[in-house]
Length: 344
Length: 212
Image (tube, rainbow over all chains, first blue to last red; front, side, top):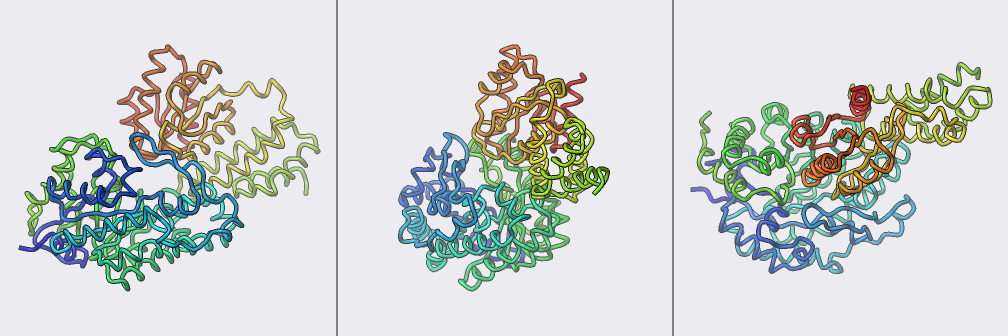
């Protein structure tokens, strides 16, 4: 029997494993499920690892997912946040407000940041403890998502029209700091690096702008991850159908897609690049029941994974209030209905 | 440039989002004797509704529509001081804000601009706004409508609090909701008066709710 790790690596190589693999690529939910406060956890590697150990034992998904919080790299440069009791961190003040401020920012030194250190150590612990059996799927906000937290998203949108030189400089800077921050975990030997590139979403910008300003950086990162020996997966929120072919053309091993993407239509255009997704975090996972989650999981497998190259996962970040029975139902559904060949 | 050319130029510059050239064109039209109110109603407002249509057709995306909104705002800054009291009677007063726990303001700002272009008086509460603040502002300003925006599944739950509190306090304002994860179904489920999928729909909805 194939191990969890083999299932995932096979799916991400465009092949058909023994069964559909499943991953909860949303670590915020895992922490809140065990009552661990996010802002405290991110600097405590033992607590992070202990929580994932509990989750793994109780739920048995195919991946363990160490992460670097979306706040870390922007905070390194001075962005500030508000942490609501439930929900995701809210940007209060961006690190820079004018293009010339960018020149004042230093290169990122991972040794100088407690959260990066904690994330790296936590990843090492997971690789040592689970690396033979589970896939170690490292997930974080990518450089272009970070860019929209180093400046306000609205300012970035303005600059895409009025100051594209600044956009180039910002993306380049953010890509370099991202590489500096995650290079240590790639050296530890993770299996997958999964980054988000959300401001490139067709919900925000035109496909033409995506191709011109965003795609080259997504491609550069995918190449770099491959060179470092890991599988590259990336996520853009919203309906990515208009750019999904471009996303696949970066050479990424897997594309993580949101719930509004029609998986059969996506499969038609991206060949055997793996699809990762795409259960609706709100209407299915948060507001659904184990029965509706099971039904949606079977549908996702049938649409996205008939010929393999598919990992069942949430379509986007899972709200902390999502019931654990629904997450369990998602994971159990691959074990009950995910053996290849799939039954319709 | 003739006045007629200036009129058409101002409109195209707003549609194209050229915020730097807009103020001078607006000033020149004022100097040539056109009333501020007419410049807004005959030029600026139609320019913004054209932007709304371009967005719905998939020609414009957020950066383009944002720059048009900024160009519109630049024109309004020139024109506002010249508006007479009677011009400000407007279509109604709208209290707008983003739900508590959410800071995504782009969509809300676009709705604010489009509503202003359509003649509404806007009370903008900004981001991360608790339900009680919506209700207080609606009371203080005798608002006709309350518009609540959210981009996150966690924060959109706050919309229900606004609806419930408005009912409890007997507020007359009707409530419209919108934003990424929000749907017509959700709006109905929480008892809101209407849902708009984008800024253009929000304006159509606001006008419908005023007539109802």
